[in-house]
Length: 219
Image (cartoon, rainbow, N blue to C red; front, side):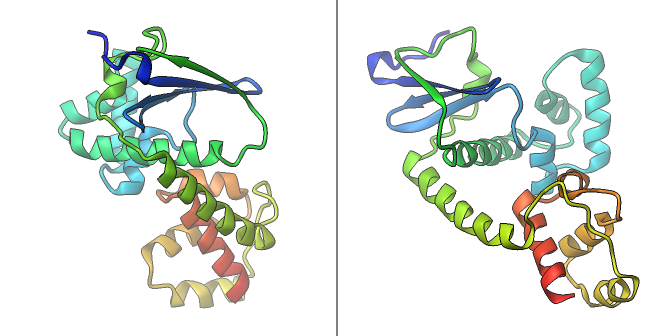
């Protein structure tokens, strides 16, 4: 059935280039979000949380192509994860997206009030109810922007490819105790650019940036 909320529940449509994002608010919080492609796909968000393994994800993705059903449902039905962990991953996914939107200096924005349009949202998009505070998103986005400004001083382009110095590589590899750092180091192969390294590892992109900055600064 349709959600209630009446005229006090605004929706927001944001357009930038060919991209379109839809936000739905309820009682002053962000309750749902839709877009064609998220910065962090749900499978990646679950991997980052350690909620599934890569084998679980690959198996579920192959089944998704056959069954044409939602990835989260397949993962839960197979016992690979739980609805609660998927809900947390969805919140992570939406947080990343909103923080990115808040960095834009220009976009086309349209408001509407009332129930969310059913051709965009369905009941599944409100499970879980996100209840994300807009104020907390503004603060988190500002924090990330400050961090990104510092990262860009060391990593000016995500299209750059980094190559190991053989001697420093072995010294660095022997010193790393953090599993995340070892995973990033292994992905730096002289062929992948920064974008591709992010895709290759099971870490949030800012964690990858921090690892790469540390490698460059210290070695």
